[in-house]
Image 1: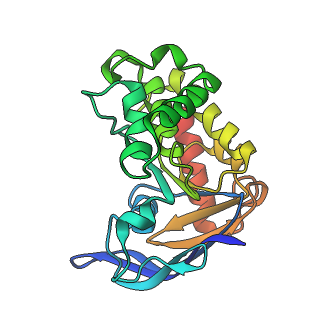
Image 2: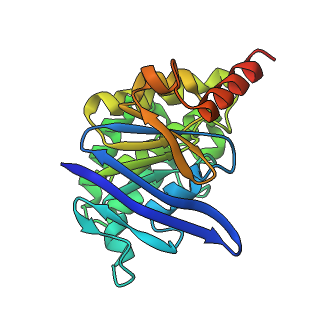
Length: 247
């Protein structure tokens, strides 16, 4: 079954067309990785899926139900979506544990005891149990991003959206964030990720989509798109990525 279907999506900001007739399917228990230059439409696509940006045309389906319908209850839809941004977005005045349990308690009406027990289980799994009572500003960037990911999965979403979750991090901290995503992938979490980490994309992607000018120019397994791209635009993008990595 497909968790997500995006059909002929268009999105503009004033006169600037950002997403251009884009279609995408994400089967259950798979990870789709979006690659492409800044401005290619990756982040806007994720924001449209999460209903943060209103689409101009096309449709978006989650588990077969159209969520792009203007009459849809956005809050109900977001109960089934988790989204992690590059800027962490943790509440600075709340502890790690309170950040994680806020939505399960207030939105999903889980008891405080159950929410805290489940949060501690995940924190222990990812070696962050000793940070439960800390405030975000006491954590490293990598730890903050891992907490943000844990917060997003605490509501047990059907689909996890990750927007360049390592781009704000020192290179030394990148691997500790990518490791938690790899673990979630092994658990069968359905994900759509925008990333500039080609090695990571190769490790986790069931499908890689290269975006340019708001559309998917090339898609397929990482072994094809990243290691043996067919389209000239994809080849040019990857050449520039590799040259930047050698600087």
